[in-house]
Length: 64
Image 1: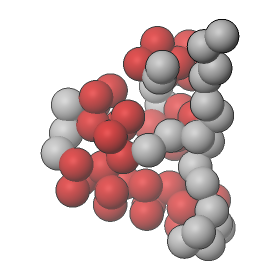
Image 2 (image 1 turned 180 degrees about the vertical axis):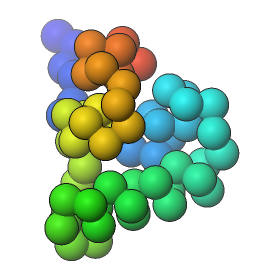
Image 3 (image 1 turned 90 degrees about the horizontal axis):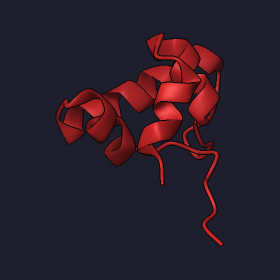
């Protein structure tokens, strides 16, 4: 059974956007600040979708 995850990682964002891994790490940091999250907290696919303006359905196509 293939399970999808609810969190998004810099490597996922790199695949979706085509940007560098370093840029994606900084983007995760910006999203954490935007949502008032601590460094140890995860970013969900929905939060990334809302922040980036990319529909969540499109984001989910890139997450295995």
